[in-house]
Length: 206
Image (cartoon, rainbow, N blue to C red):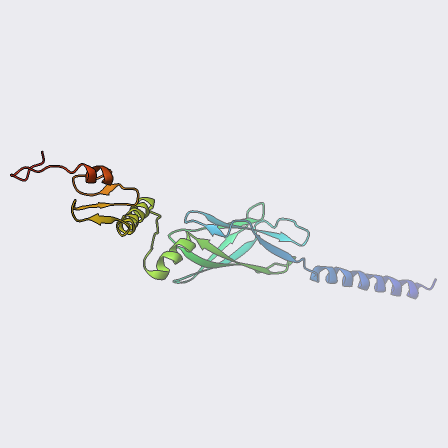
């Protein structure tokens, strides 16, 4: 084979190899941030997350930027992932409420950038909202004794309208002949009528 042809082929192969290396170096792996902690937290708890690549490999010692949006403004933090690709932010002295946390990875020579956002709740927002909504809290109880008293009173009032009155004996009696009120309360009307009590000259019963 002609020497010049061999040299040309070698040059072409080298060019192709250099091109492949350059191309491969330009390809970056996608990344992803996953939140690991709950969305309902208390002061002293941590917002936890992990950084992984497209194959699920943990990316350690990578710089992470955290934006914590509060009612008073935005707080920014920078941390590095640990050997397990994890990072965290401890919550301190925050009022009860909802907060937005944005975690961002800028990427490097081998990895693409990524970002994740989550809304967390600190404290008991439901109770606070319910209390603040009306300015007051109301409670309702079922008082069975009061209901019974009312029913008893109503019954007494309705039954008094069914009583008959004897002006001679000055007594009220019901349809069963039972006297209601006075000195003969509970006595039988017919017994009292047939055996009236005697009064002496001083007005005393004898």
